[in-house]
Image 1 (tube, rainbow, N blue to C red):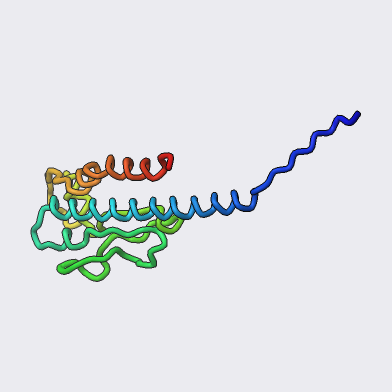
Image 2: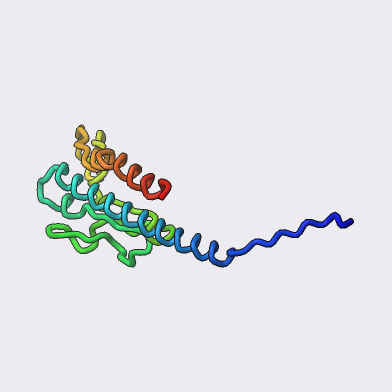
Length: 151
């Protein structure tokens, strides 16, 4: 009498192929959801941003890892070097919305103290970026969760 059990599994190559295809499709859907969410945050931030010259509003942009863009797309009156830089990480899986304008942080959070010219400031923050992010944070999470729900 033999103590051997032989099991034959069929369809492994097909199963692996289907899993790879599933991964590509789901990952692509997540990338689209992230980019669209980033663009919604950008739009809302521009709407909420206080305007003096328009440079800050024009510099608010969206960029994502692997986009190939050193800065996000910006519109006049922003300068050509304004905009958020490209985040690092797996292509399309990291999205950044923001501005590289020096005073952007002061507008968002406020500033108390002296500037580089010795002028005193007691400036209250006028948030535009964080509120825009929180407006769409839940939507992005729901969209990505829905992508991975059982088909």
